[in-house]
Structure formats: C-alpha cells, structure tokens
Image 1 (tube, rainbow, N blue to C red):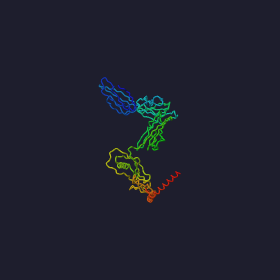
Image 2 (image 1 turned 90 degrees about the horizontal axis):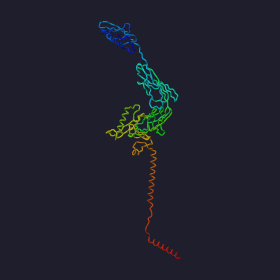
Image 3 (image 1 turned 90 degrees about the vertical axis):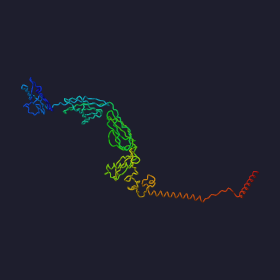
Image 4 (image 1 turned 180 degrees about the horizontal axis):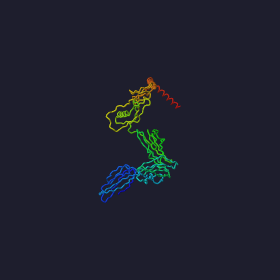
Length: 475
C-alpha cells in the first residue's frame, strides 16, 4: 500500500506518485494507474503502466487516482490516492533593521546599519534601505522629504556617512523570491559636544603656461568634523583683474583668461568658517615664438572646420624656417562690420625633423597694415595710400621696420622743413660774416728795431733826466 493523501501548493503544478511500496507474497507483475471518474479536471499523466505516475499541468482542486496492482497469480488489489492542489501560500519576510544607535561627532568612521536579523520562510533576495525623516536639533526643523536617499542592495548591511547633529530614521524593506516584503525602522541619534572649525584647502599654488588659459581651482580637499555647507571663492584684492569665472561649481572654481589669486572660504553647518589662499601664476609658454592675428577673406557664416584645419596646416608650413613650428589656434572670431574671419594663434617650436623647403617670406591674404590711422592699405601692393595732407615716414620705411605708413603730416613737414632752411641760412650767414671780418681787419706788426736817430734822442733824454735827479740829491 502507499500513502493515500498528498498536498501541494502552487506554483508547483507537477508531482510524481510512487506505487513501488505495494507488496505481495508472490510478487507484483503489473501496475495500472487511472484517474477516478469523480475527477473532472484535466491533467497530464505519464507512466500509467509502471510503479511511478508523473502528473503535470495541475490546477487548484482535488484529484483522485486509482492504482491497480496484479501479482504473478493474477490476483489484484486497488487503492485510491487523493491529491490536493492548493493555491500559493507564502508568508512575507520579517524585516529587522537592528537596534537604535546613538553616536557622537566627530565620527571615526561610518555608521553601520545591519539588517541581517531579518527572516523569511523561503529566502530574502533584496534589502532596501531608505532615510525617511530627519530632525535637526540645531534649527528645530523637521525634514520629511520623499526618500532623501535610498539604496537597493543585495546585502543586508549599509554604511552611512555625512551626518550632522540630529535625529535620523531609516527604514529597511526586505523582499523574498515571491516579492513579498515587510519593513522595519531604526533610529540614529547624532549629537555633538564641540564644533571644530572646518579646514579650508584651496589646492595650493599653481603655475600654468599659456596658451592653456582655463584651469579649475579645486577645494575638495577641505574638511570638517561634521559637514561643510558652503564654499565661497573670492578674488584677492591684490590679485590681477584678468580672468573670469565660468561656472558656479561650489568647491571648484573654473577660470578662463587667468592671471590672479583666489581665496577659498568655507563654513560648516554651525557657522564656523575658515579660508585658504591659492596663488595662480600664469607664464608665457617657453616655446611660444609669437602670437599672430590674421584676417581671412571669408565670411564667418560660411567658414568651415575643414577650411580652418587646412589654413592652420598651411601656416605651419609657411612659418617653418630654421626649426619646425606648431600653430595653436587661440581665438576664432569675426570683424564687427565686414564679418570676415579673424584668427588669433600662437607659434611654438617643436622637436620634429625640419623640412627641406625654406620659407622666404610670409604675408597675409588681406593687408593688415593700419597705415597709422591716416590711410588705407592697398590689398594688392600692400602699400599705404595716405589721406590728404599725410605722407610716409621715409626714415622708418628705409631704415626702420620698413613698413609702409602714413606717419607724417605734410603741414608739419613743411613747417619743420622751412624752419630748418631758415636756421641753416642764419648759420651760414653768421659764418660768412666771421670770415669777412677776419679778412679785412689786419693787425699791426711789431718791429724789433728802431731808427738810429730816435734811439740817440731817447738816450740823450734819459741822460738828462738822470743828471737832474742826481743834482737834486746833491742839493
């Protein structure tokens, strides 16, 4: 005989009935399974002529099957088997989020939320942690947002950081294989006995070389015992004014066209603050030869990327002389009135092999000469056509930078020329007068001899005077 009653629960819809436990003193030679007439439900039956009957596609209800066994003496015996198929029965899991916690700031690590004590009659397949509420003691504000943060994990343990003083409540929801679930909560109380001011870290001084003109000042290494709630980047009053802020990125300060210093000022949730200074030094590139601006005879609306790349390659070839160079585009713009393309680029030295072709001269397609603001540049000859009453500085053109210009005013040239002529005439007249006086005023010649008679008379007079003096002395 065999068990006459079986119970299964959906979704299990297959079962095997075992008739091998039937016994006989001579031995059983055959088994025969059939469905009872009282059963009107459909079922798939396999192995009806053997000891094992496999049933499939079962539905909710009661099934009756009759087993007939025959021994070697052709004696028979029957028994009836009842199979009860019941609806699915699954007990939801029991969630356990652990015991409430009380921690003191500053924390030495993260807070561990442990849900390993959760149970289920089958198997827990998923743990979901959610923060459902928080009360900040400092501000006495209750925040109950829609899941400020949550995790979906395959492990029952979660690590939580970033606490500030307050009362936190977390909810754990566990799911089993049938998606049945239950929830439990755990409370975390965070207190703080002393507030330590934050430590600002602006990232240290930086030195960059142009043409790299964009940099990010990073203050993410700043720290606090609780939480930093505000980052503020300010320009030092002694800093250079060049450079502007691109984006508001809290702890990052993204700058363009730089030459400045910045201060990273931050504060924590309780109002304590600190600051740090980072200097940014912008130097010209060591390999930059020059910065050049050219105007291309093309409309900015139709100038393509392919044309730009081609133009830069041509410039590299043209500017290659004693050593190879690299052209870096800095700015692509257009003239305000003509809409012609304006390119600003730098030329840098490179270490690649030099080409065999030597460039003799480089010139732009459109004349860039401003003609001193007093004329226009002929696009074909590249010489200045000066306005009325203006002329070229011949000394600059012949002996200076040899660039065509309109530096001299004709009126001033005439006045200066007339003044020079008058001054030269006066100087020549003075020189001529001096020579004339020297020619007609001859000095008297001195003689070293006298006439004999004059000499005798003079000696006679001297003798008489001598005698008279002698006579007076005698008297």
